[in-house]
Amino acid sequence: MPIVNSIAALHNEMTAWRRDFHAHPELSMQESRTSAVVRQRLAEFGTDEIITGLATHGVIGVVRAGRSARAIGLRADMDALPMQEETGLPHASRHPGVMHACGHDGHTAMLLGAAKYLAETRNFDGTVYLVFQPAEEFEGGAERMVRDGLFRRCPMQAIYALHNWPQARTGTFLWRSGPVMAAVAFFEITVTGKGSHAAFPHQGVDTIVVAVQIVNALQTIVARSIDPNGAGVVSVGSIAGGEASNILPERVVMKGTARWFRPDIGDQIESGMNRLVSGIAASFGATAHLAFRRHAPATVNDPDATELAVNAARAVAGHDQVREMAAPTMGGEDFAFMLEARPGAYLMLGAARGDHDPLLHHPCYDFNDEILPIGASWLATLVEQQLAKGRAGMA
Image (cartoon, rainbow, N blue to C red; front, side):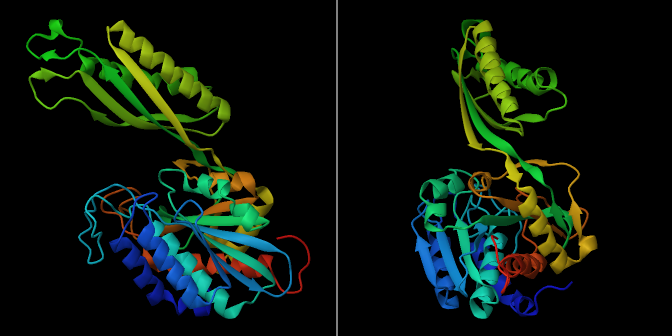
């Protein structure tokens, strides 16, 4: 695979960085160590400027070359997930209940590899902003960085990112113009009834029964209320209520997520959930409250920027290893906020080791270090192609 030779030489170094991040994961808005390590590396590489303070732990390295006013951004996410790791690897998480189960450790290491190469070679004409973002999983880190002045302080014409994809063969780039990932909302439903002894259910209002009915009914929103030509998901991922086998709890709390692409479908899902949650609870003599929090809009790739991203991918991996996605994924990505503010593109990079790899957000998942130089080469190639020396115009 024709990855950049000097980036290939950084493979062991990038692997060490990645495994260090993996061993020291930090949750959204808690990335103090990760941020400090990134700042230290960028300073060692000789970047021209390091901008901090956006979204608390955000870091932006700035590398300039030549005299052109053209500029692009490259973004990586840094946070981990609230999960207990079960890999048993030597570099496994040292923090109980926190794990890099989505590969953000690898994304950060790839962007650091590209940063080192770009700072050393400066084989371009313009400015590259290396955006290390906190809080992708929760707390809206991308939105916070935009709100804190990312594009005002870093006047780039376009911004790019990628995500490792264990479902696809290692080294394969996947792309799609238009919607590539879904809009995301998280919800919490609190059902309140009347607790009682389980042997005398008639003396209470059974919140367990109410919760079960709500879970079943929520599945009818997409199946029976949404246009079949659209797409939506409503999933309950957590139900908590009661501690004893012979007590009916006073309260049950359910948490989950909803996904969609079209904004009107998101509105339908939220209104449908409100209607069903309150109506079902009332029909049993209970009450229920829905908290519906929209985390990110759909991630939508700009057509022109996508073409440029695909050109860079083909330069790195070859034409046959760059494939169009048949459909967008229901996964979510708060990089969407950056793409609302600037044109750009978000690609997937295949990372499968075999047919039965643990997938993202699995307790046995571990980032495939073999793709580190591939991803770093793509990031660097984007810069060298779009900010090519002697080329006029916008990035």
